[in-house]
Structure formats: C-alpha cells, structure tokens
Length: 377
Length: 123
Image (tube, rainbow over all chains, first blue to last red; front, side):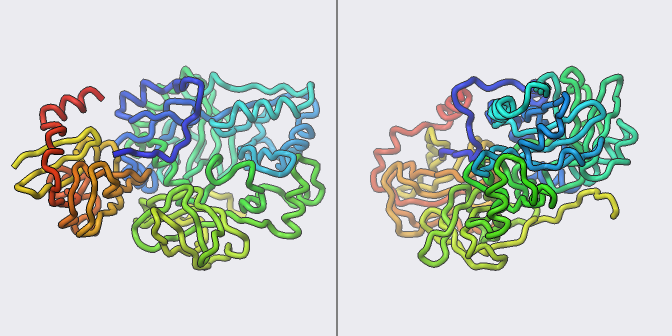
C-alpha cells in the first residue's frame, strides 16, 4: 500500500521540534512533518478526536504558527498600508481576521491581528511565516519594530466545554466574547488569551512562554473535558466549518473576493483602499470574481480529495482544494474553486475521482454550523 | 491453508487455487479510520502489482496492489456498508477480494507470518 498524505511536506530544511514534542510522543501521538515541524497528526484516531472536540474540548498545539508583535511610532498606519484590516479602529482586546496580499491582490497568507495594551500581536500560518516576515520587513518603515515570538508556544482549546475547562484554571476567560482577547496569568506565567479558533466551535487560543507550555498542557489535559487532538482532526474540523486552509484553499493565484473573504475588509477600507492589492479587491467588488471558493456536497460515500477536477457536463470548471470524509455528518464534503457561472448554491456539478464522475452540488458553508460565543448585539 | 504477506502490508490466504486478499492489522493502524473501500469487479484480471483496490481513510486515499496475478472471483460486499470492518477485523472479516491464481509460483517470493512480523518490527 502507498499512502499519499494530502499534507504538504516542507522541503530542504530538516524539521524543527515543537517545545511540546516529547509531550506529544509520550501521549502516543503519531508525528508527521508539517510546515517545517514534526507535528502530532493523531493520538487515538482522527474520527474519535474530531467527535470529541465537537462534544467536549480538544487541545491543539499550534506552536508552529508564527506569532509576531509590533511596536513603534506610526504603527497603525504602517500596518494599514500593508493589510486590508482596519487597524486604527482596532481597540485594545479586539482581534480581526485579515490577509497579506501581493500587488496583484493574490493571497500570500491569512492571519489574525489584535491589539494588546503595549503592542499589536499577529498570528500567521506556520508554513508561510518566514516568507511573511520577509514581506513585512520589506514593507514596514524603519520606525516599526517587529519581533518573532519564537520563545512562545501557542495552544488552542476548542469545543463546547472549552470554556468550562479553561476558566477552572484561568478564571475570567469566560468573560471574553468571540474575537475578544486579554492578558491573564497562570502560576506566575503571562498568558495572552483570545476567544477564537479554527474549528467552528467556541474556544480559545492561548499564547504563553515556551517554558510554561508543558505544565499548562498537562493542567488542561487533567480536566475531564479535555483531550489532546492532532492535526488530522484539526483539518476535518475546519473543513466542516467551511474555513479555508492557506496553501490549499488559498494561494497567490486566489483573490479575496473570489475566496469569499470580503468580510475581512470593512466598508471604509473597501472604498478608500490604501493597502497592497486593493485594485483587484475594488475591481472584483464591482464586477465580481471570475472564480469562487465554494462548498461541495458529494453523493455517495467516496471522498473527493484535493486536486480532483470539477466538471459541468463536458467542461472543466474547477478544482477541489480540500476534501474528505466529514466525521460529524458521515458523508464526503469538499471545498473547491469553480468558475463564477457555476458557483451558485445548488448548482449540479461532477467531480472526477479515479476516472469516475461523482455527482456533487454547490453547498452552503459551513457544513456544520458555527457555535461561536458571540457578543449579543 | 497458508497465509502469506507482502511488503506492501497485504495478507494472502491460499486455499487450492483461490487466494483471499486483505490488508494487515499494521496497515489499518497506519491508515486510521477507514471510511470507504473501492473494490474490484468480479471477472477482472490483474497482473501482480496492478492497482486492485483503494482504501480511503479520513485523511487520504491509499492504493492496494494485487499481491499476485489472478482473476477476481469475489469482492467483500460487507465492506460496502461497513468499511470500518477493516479497522476492527483487518485480517479476517475485513478481507478485500478473492482471486483465482494464475501463477502459483508467485507465492514463493512472499513472506510468511514470522518474516512479516520481523519486517514490521524493522519499520
């Protein structure tokens, strides 16, 4: 048998070790190379870990991601000249989803940006972090200082019971709403906690000093609600939640509007522009994007994987960019790019898998409803 | 009845000229939760090494090769409704297909149970 993992293997450099490497191995994780790190893909099994997270709380080590902090005079304006987020209007304790775009409006990365009392904090994807840093250095003025927080770990606790488990250790986190963040302390260590994540569930992301990571992970997993969860379930959870994964569903060939990420650009910035890549965003807001990211539901049980071709009759109209079995729904689901004319919800399409055509339909996303703890409006 | 193993983690039970083929317990553990098995049609002929079946786990699709040459005489219909049978009973009820052997001498190059166990230990 030959397995072909649909995870990109970072080439050239030997993989780095996470600060929790030994902790994962001691808990029976199967480690694989991902984004330049040896990462736990699963512990007891993807299906069980996925369902546990939807029902209870899963602990994910996402320390491979790039944590950056920025300070300096003129910082807000300098960041707004690069990313399409409204930084000047970002209050302390608030987080926004944003993107790094190239001059042609192609997506270089997606990210989270938040304001802390003394700096601006950003989390970027692990596989792209060094390229992102190069891009930011090139475009930031000298007055702005950027630091890669490589002495910090990043943990995500996700699931409906995450709030119960985390607030037992860190009282006060229950007061945060979705996309809010604040500083806390645990056994003398500073934590930066945001109520966010990438599973569609309520949950938290916790940035903490690397030397505290193991004890904190142990303390979390000592809670009855919490189990460690690997990358495999992280991928199936985010796919069910309709969330795009950079390097698969998003790439430099892809535009913001086509990717259905226009929500990340507030009205004022849509009009005024002033960030790298605005011309394409403005053009596609006015005229529509030629290709769109869509959800796909597939008839039968056979999953369609990344790279599968999408057809409307005899015409090739798109490509699957993420696909697999949905543990929550028990059916295959996928995400892909299709020509705008075939992107309306309900459109009947076909996906080719090993020479067979599977009947598929453009489906609304998320496939599994989000359960974020939003602030009542 | 003799049981043989391949380096691609298949087992083959041979009774007369009929070979029953499945994947090993080691293979199912490596693959994780199996959600779909694509089996060959009856009457199809394979040369040794041809793509014979596909196992879909939550994460990935994996090919299963014909460990020996032969003609498919039966596919395991139980896997259609319950692909997880491969996880729970890989080396018995989770069999994939039965072949009528066309060249029994191909069996000579395969491993026996002890040799396979040693092979897996070295991985």
